[in-house]
Image (tube, rainbow, N blue to C red; front, top):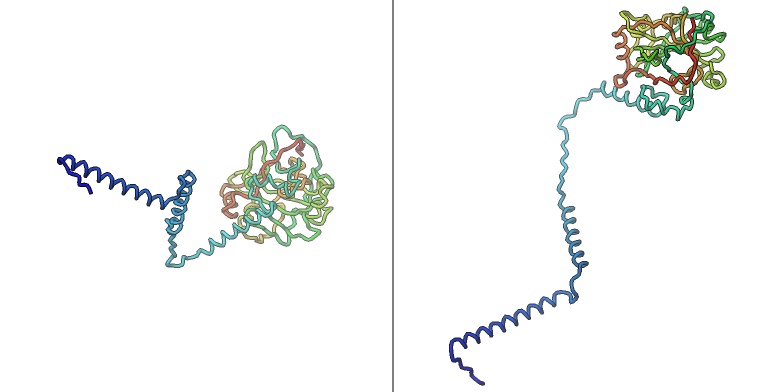
Length: 354
């Protein structure tokens, strides 16, 4: 073995430095070999990076499912609340009536035009050209002479007088013996005889005059004596365009109220049917002398276009207090009584009988 001698301190330092570099290089080489053993021999790609990112996202999502951030807390009342049974019954009544109205357009009569426009889908005649009510225009009335209209048995009292109040309209029916039934003929009715059927109240009015709407309207409906029942007249209405006769009484605000409205207010109760004092039909529908006449329809489905309408030329009186009292007879969720929108005249003629 040869011994190397160092001539100086400088030569010794150089040798130590070279030895250190050799040792560090050997360690680095061993580290690279170890790392290479733990990884794949192929180069890393973008797909590998995407896989790693997806795994990370999956882990984070799993952690969120295991650790929900929302906590639901339910608090139960310590005491049972007191039930207002009267209010509950009233709300149930409103919901039942509303459900029936939605099921059958005939029962949906709260005056909303959006529903009225769909009546014809179930009752095609509601989309006809001779529908009611109408606006009686100024200057389009033809004067026509005629013989006097007869109101037979209008002074006879019925055996019973009934008032029907279903919560959104009021109707009156009477029960007379066959020989005493109120009847109309002559005048605008010509030679036909019409037997009284019912009275229906509308507020505000369905018919209008010159665009003016009235606070109250009563419609006194009669059925031709040729038919035994209302339904019989409906069934033949396509062949008989004058199967019904209706008289329209319009009410205007005055400082007193007509006796007919007074009788109704004295007996009617909200949402209930009742029997009122027996009295002559003339109290509710005074015989008229002057009136306008036109051919129209029933104002509710099936909207049968077989009605001869007579509109009294003089209004009947009602006070504002009485009109407000009528409104209170209906369920508060309904605004006003049933009322159909004004229908087009469609070139129909209107006659004035004097």
